[in-house]
Image (cartoon, rainbow, N blue to C red; front, side, top):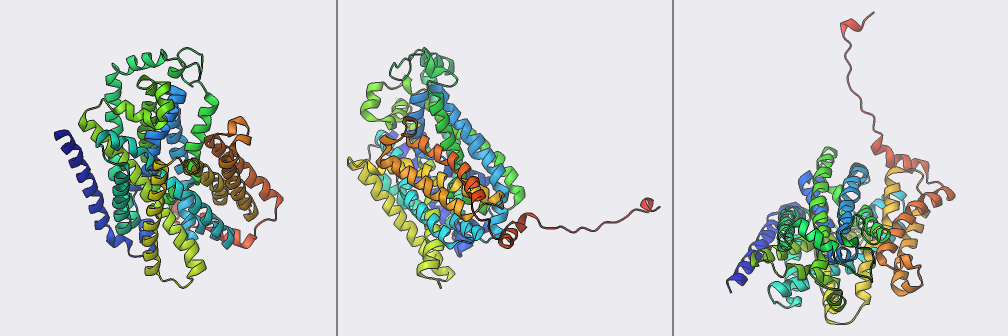
Length: 517
């Protein structure tokens, strides 16, 4: 009984802090710029943690860490390293400054608005809005999946209750305080994630006699169905380096094209803050993502192929944690809640702002005033959260597999459709609208086909992970090739768009007497 009281007390304190922060940020959310971007005045620490916590959710900690740790052993840590270098460091270095400068210059608050202003195409904005709406909702629902087994193990509380409570509390602070409340809560949740993952790794390895003993035990594990090479699960690249590369690319490079990730660069205070934010975000990813995949790599010491076949990959991490103390289990639950709530808040804010600003405002209610826009976004947050809860509960309580498949495809479809158009749009004046539209259509069609006729794909592309990575890489080729084959964009418009990078700065110069001849 005392163990349960400790767990519940920690949860109550955690939720109380989240709600208090949301209510205290109400004054930042009185207009569209404040509600969606925090007035573009968010500092590097908050932005870096908002980026990192939106990146890593329960899907990573419970789902991906368990699944890829089981498949690749300790080599799964490369996915976390890739997340830190490709998904954080290079994303900030390549996209951060140019995104911040150009989006302010074009007065765009969402990715579809950017596409409209950059390519002078309202149709692109509507197409991007539709893709985001279709694929962010199931991605949002997937966040709840990692909570079911952990809450069942820790509290023996019904999954539906857990999902509804989490959704309601997240909705309250996002609706109340908008982006600023999300960013501050992300910072708090990020601290919990860092402390939690370090504590859990230490406890799990200690239960196996320490790191070297655990690594030695992993080297002795054999699974002929995966590989006949001795010690392969404790090796540098694991049993399937090609498959691991696909995981690294999709989970790392994918962030470059996800609207809820890129939007963090819109809101940062200044160009100078980007350099500091880049370092903070990279270190955060090394600890959290690297720690999650590293932990998952030892999953075969705690489970068996028979148990995994019966209960799925999502059972691996909870099985590893069952022997922890009540206090550490409570820490893990709050860790996963933090990861899920931070990502959930980012997704619903991106979804509601996109639908309001990019579709309703310009199509159904062209004269919508600013207060009405903010109210509409708040109402849509409720709608999006409700839909995601229903999807999560339907999937959990039935044998419907379509939803689960669509969740797996969401990341690949969004990143495949947007990464190349957004990247080339920031850097290359010759990028054409037609090339971006082709990329939109290609990635969306390929990923949807992966759901319905995946068996017809080549073996390496039947996995949604590999298909998504393929779409992202293909887009990087499609956009420049189609751009060179199609009519160049209007010179005057392109020069105006890129003028934000080419401003002339005039300074006073004083000559010294010694310079006179």
